[in-house]
Length: 182
Image (cartoon, rainbow, N blue to C red; front, side):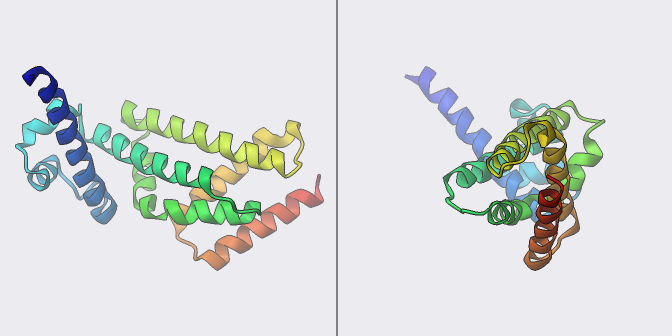
């Protein structure tokens, strides 16, 4: 019986650390949160975190994976009819993690955990946007480049904090120009 209890307790503690890290990272930013601060907030000794995670970058990757999965699952269940509405919805939902986007880009070359997370984010995002563009009637031969343009636009909007009206105008102009050239 104790054999079954230990893995459950370990998973609960892991989830608790991730939850605390998510709150701290989203509130204060990655650089402002030391492993000691995270441990204190999670109610564990600092070295305990290393039983669950290789380093702070791995904690960040797990936090971002949770955020990303939550938002993508919600996106898949939305029934917004227009591509602009879907893109605006996605940007608005990812806004809470925008503070961490510059951290991800700054740490790409330094951290295998962050690099792997970033690659996965792009794979998921690109597949989603590629599908949406295909549904809009864009040519298959243009989809790779168009997908990158939209990914860069979404990342730019998240990093530079545009209000919803400006974000909408950016997507409208982009789509209008692309459709004129099809």
